[in-house]
Image (tube, rainbow, N blue to C red; front, side, top):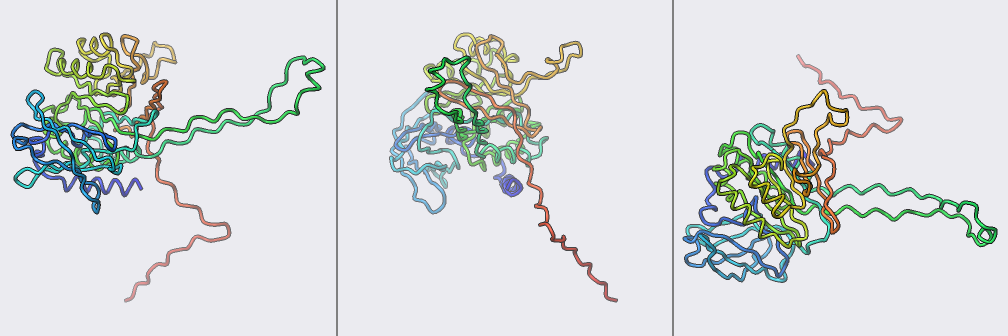
Length: 402
């Protein structure tokens, strides 16, 4: 299965449209890398360039081939420099991935997998974190395999073994007579693993920040069945923005809020944007950041915003550079990938680079956030051994004819 998905994704990369994608000249969001997730009967926003929205063009959603388009009830307004369309989803919309289509000349704009309709927002769900794919250095097939693994159901937890109840110490005679015969009892079964809801991919996304590498990232993410949200590293911010738009943004999933914590310069424009987006998530059940830089390596202004003024509950990043210290105790000889943020209030979840062939599942529940150990895609199953008593067929050699 992994092999065939990898071939499909690599084919998608090879057939990707060359040159800068035209949609960002018209629509800033939602799109691949920053999709909208919405309930039937709910609403989402489309941010468009003023020129594209001057005639208030029609918007619609198109599902898989053979399904009818979903008309959208649209209310156009302005927000800052953008025209904003509040789009209402029909209540009868079927859950699934939809393309957003805007009727503009010439030819219109179609954004595949820009909108995902879900039946509900569960209280418990899984988030998949892939860190530093570095396309151009890491083989595309490795990233493709991780994206496939991200969509796989989580393994069931082991069932607890039945055990006999412990007898009371020195029971009284009347208690002995009234005691029921010992029977085996079972522990409460563990909670079933929640389904994966979406993928977070943090930078560096590419090895050299080239346009060709970002084309490949775009095609690989577009082929992923789950919604995927990107946060770049320092790898070619201009090229990233040309394909995916703003590097700092926030979105909500049910009661929870997520923010891309891209940082470059402490006093740059992104600093104020991080503060603005973080404030917008106040009141969320859980607030979770995701970005390339580990918490301890962020500029001080961002650390104050995210860990002191309005502390995040958790942040998902790549692993910090680490060198072993031969003089340290044995328990400190391994890098600490999950631990507290520098200020001690935020759970810092660091995931090894995708080039190592691993991802991390993060379980979000009403009572807490849990980071599982990094996991690798399952290797292909070996061929089944021959049945007992059956000899393995021997291939006959072709005879050479003179």
